[in-house]
Image 1 (cartoon, rainbow, N blue to C red):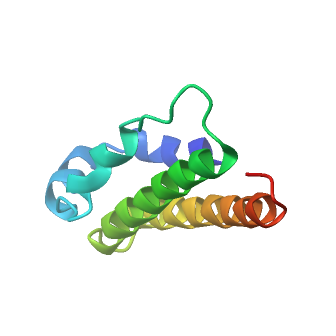
Image 2 (image 1 turned 45 degrees about the horizontal axis):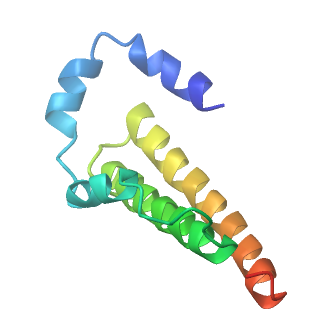
Amino acid sequence: EHISRISPLAKSPELADHLKDAIQRPEADRQFSDAIQTPELGDKPDDQAVLQYALAREQVAIEEYSELAANTPPGPLHEVFSYLANEESKHKSELEALYYEIVHSGGV
């Protein structure tokens, strides 16, 4: 579904100009590199450590896409960023449910 939403944008001749004019560098962007840095989890990280890392990455993605959506005028690009923020939020909710299940079942 991501590709079906983004592909038409890539073919748009106005996209480059629109990107230059419409999108400000989001405040969250300074922290995006934090999410792509792999923390030292050791040779055998427990489930809790892995899930905490994944939850942090999802949170950064939510913030990044939300900030991009907030700084993009209404239109297809705004819709894509809003959609991506929502998808990341769903991922985070799924991970939180899994985290709760594992941590509270004594699986850590």
